[in-house]
Image (cartoon, rainbow, N blue to C red; front, top):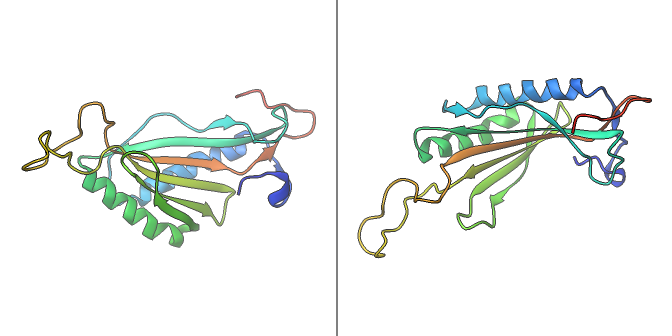
Length: 172
């Protein structure tokens, strides 16, 4: 679901606020599906460009947010539970794997079967104990200095839309 001319139907015409509100609601529903409650990041959905389209008339809505919890294990539980529950709530898992970063963080992607949105969920930061500095003995606990706090990262992106005739996208 990426809204380019050669991969499906032409973008639907919609006022920006409609898909923005859908993104807010979908993110709230995703949070409610999490089996672990943690602290969600602040912020809301914003407007981004549609690649390969006229930026004055075509747009997407993106809502990146994250969840922190008491431990990396809670985040792993949340991610596994969400991946299991999403298909029962109108989502289709379309990809899963590990990123190519140093931590080889796990991720999955899902497409909404009801709305025109794609979701990527990634377990960010170090989620395993760091090896001891000497390479011997017990691993150190926690997140090594310089590494990011473990987070469950959500990136919700709409399909490409077109503003109504005579209007322009002016909120990038």
